[in-house]
Amino acid sequence: MIEVVLDQHQGLFIRPQVKQVLAYLRDSDFPTYLKELEGFLTNSKIRFHIRLLIMNQLAFLQNPTNEEWQIVKQLLEKDDNFKKHFIDGIQSEKWLRYLISNGFLQTFLQSGDEKLINLIIWKLRILITPHAKTVIDFLQQFPNIDKKDEHVSYILDGLDHWEDERAIRLFQSHLPTIKSCDHLYYTHFLERILKFNPKVVFEMFFDDLNEKTNAIKSAGDFD
Image 1 (tube, rainbow, N blue to C red):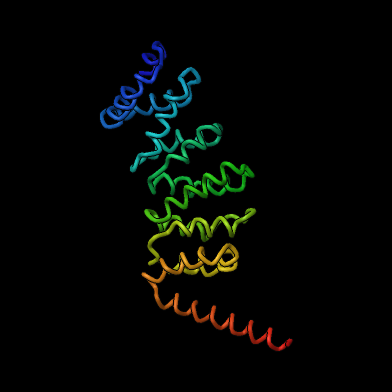
Image 2 (cartoon, rainbow, N blue to C red):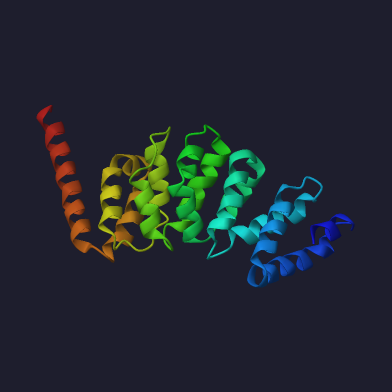
């Protein structure tokens, strides 16, 4: 199929056909699909809008295979453009696990590339509710990078369901950072945790109350 595309204008009209044929080949002739997939993603003569379409189609897969991962892995290692567009597009937990278990997410976060780092943080914030266990597992081993506490707090702020005790412990361990932002930010966390673990919220409320009371007493001692 790639030869046919190269012989054409490669305008926008060809995008639906490319997408449909690749989807068909994936179900009916997987070896040919892999060959075409790699060809489209690595051939510099394929126009970018077509490659972007295929990157997104690949990133949207809910059940990627090890063979597809091998193609993605090679591109992640050498193609910065692919790296950012692929991470931007992923929705499935399986792709996320591939990135984590093979050390890519950790390496990218330590790269010093602010745009890439911010993209990963934003993506983890989006994925933490649908794939809470995997993201929380990763947050527990989050690399020691600049603004680590702010990044972890921002990702946790995307969590809607707080059943996992580990998420609450992460929240508690980042309280100084969360409280330093503004009161509404802190309150927003407590409101969501309250639905799943009211005991923790009540304990924190009284801790805050005692802290403020002690601060007032200390101030009074100097009068």
